[in-house]
Image: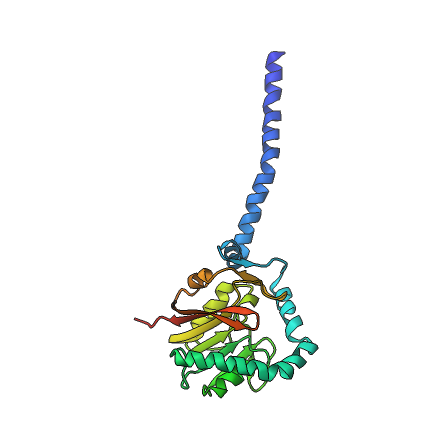
Length: 246
């Protein structure tokens, strides 16, 4: 009788062990699939000082969310009327100060990323940077062409200067910065206006808590300038210069 009991115990113990291990194996498989399918988002969510907001099941749902703001008729009317002159005045001051710091010149070929109706582009032209263009999901001719900042429609090394105040809208910050460094000439300057002291608007795709993550994202550039600004809800200006080829 004792021998029969011992033999029956072995398969029962084996079955219990197998059943208990299944949830753990499923968890490992789930984690592996997330990392493989979406490495950029996985790394961003776990990086210190930068967090991707949840809720986007597909890239298409993210784009649609951004278009909900860009195509909002009330907002577009405000951007082209009440906000037009006010924003141009503020951006003109910002760009004038960047010229004084030798980060921008009249000879710069400039791009404004996420330019909406084109206020930043108009401001660049008013301070003497005539070769300027904007890019947004929704074009606004003649100042703004259509483009996705995760995949800019420009050749490598096109611009001397790139400006953006929509970093918080990037679902994939690595791709956002990677495209800037790809399309910027060696020695070119990128200036970002970001918020680190308060959370951005409801359409933002990420939250930034310091400039340190930006320093890590700009792998081919050096940090050259940081200052506090009052830029329509954004509080920090950060400038990088792309390293020249050796």
